Length: 421
Image 1 (cartoon, rainbow, N blue to C red):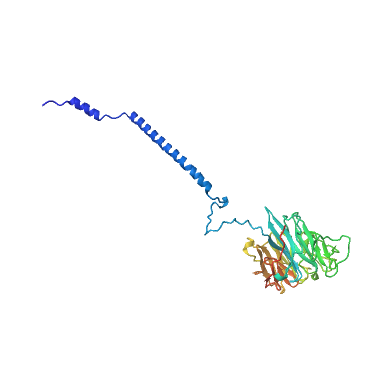
Image 2 (cartoon, rainbow, N blue to C red):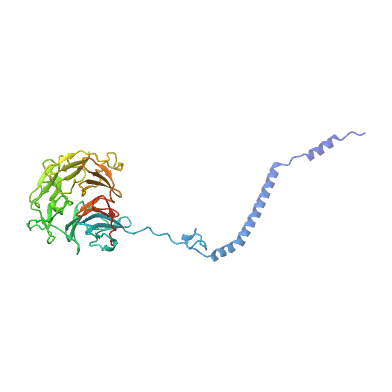
């Protein structure tokens, strides 16, 4: 038996189990990847070249829609889209004041405003306030008091001064109060006292004031001419109380020059003589508010930093005494519960009870007293501030309202107006 060839056997095993050189393997792999990448790129370019012309042709052939309808579907179940409506430019009418002698002879100062780019253009119009819609008439005067339709206008007042004329006023941008006489037959007219005419007033002539805190004048009933009162009350910052009927005298509020206290002056002889009585309280926020139902019992409210101060007279203004009465206004007026910074007013009802109001959006809130202002309680009221006329009361609100007794109120139709230009 021959010996095995161990040397040959080892050579065969080494040959069979020899590992490849790794540098050569990595180089071969990179060549394979580059070849595959070139092949895929050539195939992609060929595909795009074939499909692109067909896609472009199809896009041009498709029907077009307006760009604003790109996200809207239109079909049998969805009607053609319509553009969104523009913001409303309809005018907004606000009743600023009401005056008159009785229910069927009322007139309203209506501010008609239309929104512009950044400001509102407004037209102040004087319109008959008819009891029914069938009796409505067109405005008597339009575009009153403002120099420019965008000018602000505050504290608009309207006063019936003769059977055929009204006195319209408002505070303009410069802080001055502008006055215009509104003739019921011919519209708005400038008005000023005649300085050289010293004609004395006669019974029925109405006191007027044509300058803020200015002299007291009167308007003659026969011809609507304005003349200066025979004498002036010895007061500063005079404010004529226009809510008092002429038969109860001429009443004004102001500041006593000696004491700087709020004061009331009354003339019982058409402005020839005045009784001036200080009220023992310094004025604060706004002018005093005075009301009387008979010319004998009257009430004054003075707004101060410490709240509303009340004064009462029962002898036609010869003497005044304080009323230390709580006024339970709604909580919306803040911590003190009193509207010292709001427009305030008061009227005496037919049964002699007192109704006090304060403006509060969108109308007013009310207190009433049945013991000459000694105590108050909250009361229901109409749509806004109240104006007394000969046969009842009118509420300046939306809608305007009328009452014969100050308790039961009925709505009046909103007055017509013309659109501002």
